[in-house]
Structures are given as C-alpha cells and as structure tokens.
Image (cartoon, rainbow, N blue to C red; front, side, top):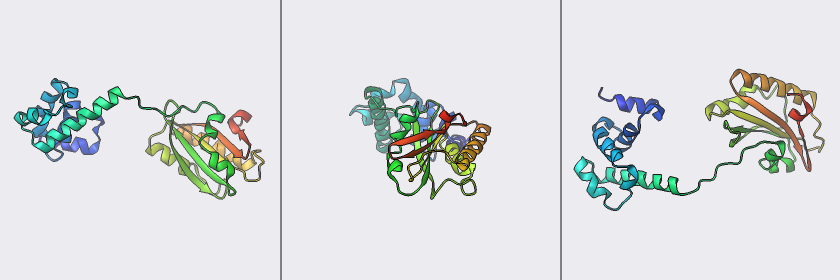
Length: 212
C-alpha cells in the first residue's frame, strides 16, 4: 500500500524490519521506493558500507549522493557501537547508591522532593524535581510522580526529599505519601523501591524501617 510504510514509521519504528528502517532513513516521504535498495545494502552487510567507495557502490542502486552519505554514516555509527565500549549507568542496589545522585539535596537549605526513575535493571534513567517547599499529601499527588515514569518508560522509581533541619526521622505525612505512592505505582506496574529522607551526614530509608 502506497504510503503504508511511512504511516507505520509515524506511529513508531519498533515494528519495522531492518530493511524498512533503512528505507525510511533514505527517503522519509516515499520509503517504499527505497525498499529494494535497502535490502540489497543489508544483504552485503551494512558494516561494509563504512568505506570511501560507498557513494560509488550506492549509485547503481538508485541512490543519490545524499542518500549514499546516510548509508555510510549508518555504517560508521554501527562500527563505532560494535568496537567501542559504551558505559551504562551503574544500577542502584542500596540506599548508599542513591546518595551519589542527590548530594546537592543533602546540602540544600530549602526542602525539595525529587524522583529518580530506573529501568528494569534498576539503572537510573532520569532525575526529576517534583516539588520545592516540602512533602505534603495535599500538594504532591501520585500522578505528579508517576507521569514521568510512564513517559520514559521506567520500571521503578525512588523518591528522595531532604530535611534541612538535619533530623531525618519520617513524619506521619512522609509515611502517608509513601504508602499512597507505592500503592498507585503497583496499579501501574511500577515499583517504588524506596523513599529516602536525607540531610547533611545522614539519611533514613523508609523501606529499611519496614513502612513499605
């Protein structure tokens, strides 16, 4: 169907086959016209196109110089990915691991709430500032914390907030917000791993207290 491949691309590339992906990169408006050339390129091994003669080899396939350059860039990117070591974030496995991500929070004079979103292996994806000025159930709703997790998407999260007073004992409101968030996260297939209260030189893990 004419335009069918482009429509599928606009909906998301996850269902596209490698040849279809390459065809879309070569011509986003009319990718169907590039399918045969894309399959021929892949059949010879994409890595073999990371060479100066890429353009010369691409012209007989009906590609123009700009499209030939795209093939070469894809091939060179793949070469780098296969030959270089790309560091992945270190998984968070304990409260002490979280502290490295919130050192600024421990020194802050104003109370702040942040969420750290993790993938399925508990590697940090992003840190998000949720609130400034305190953790109150009337202000912070589960949706405020969980919406970024769904957008990433994340598999788990950790909530952290600071007590500028230096006393990291959880308040009744801290515990209530934690329970509400843990319950809402479970309904969405997410896991609240912990809620840390931090201050200069100390912290309290609500999970370690047994409250979640």
